[in-house]
Image (tube, rainbow, N blue to C red; front, side):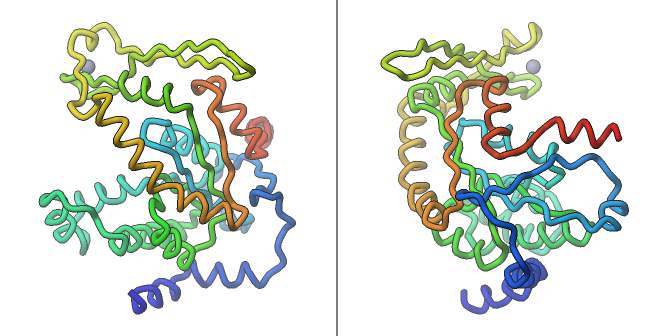
Length: 288
Ligand SMILES: [Zn+2]
């Protein structure tokens, strides 16, 4: 492990981290928030020539079903920083002829968990590839899941901000139980129609269902592990494992707690506001 960390520390991300630590830093808001302008679309060459300031190094936390992939992906598009989901990293490597694909296939076929080392290895490779192509920054989704992973990650690159997406447990449960898949085309839908009135000072919350088109409607199936018991257990395990990770980043002043106020139409503008991002900057500079 020690040798492995040393190896990681020599990566270009780590070198850049060191240089960024020694150079002057912009003053930070408590949660490590700087003012971020949405990056206009531009060519990689132009981006390199303009030597843009370093893009975001963000992490999304949130339990299964909260929609972190959706928000991470939207922010990725807006800020021009790649959205890196570790599940995708593993799937991509499995489908490639990369050095780890055979080892990974063995692990996955035996139903075992992919080790921290392999995940970090794939991740640092992905970050270095991104840098080599002139890319900048990242938005991580699904990583780190444990303190150990967070510590390893800290040795590889600097994390600016960790966004913890939260949704009331009863709503989360309803959303998870509302998940449906089309048995023919594989499309994912959600039949949960959430409409909870505010009470005792707690704001109401409504989230529209994501209904299938008519040709899928008769072919919907529920995943066998989307039962109330299994979903509750999944959430319990998630909270047990994630609390130390949240504390890890909270103690470093990097955790931004964000309570989702509803579905995407309500949540997206509020999230941008919490992140100090002005979406209109994007349109203005893109039009210029
Ligand atoms: Zn379908």
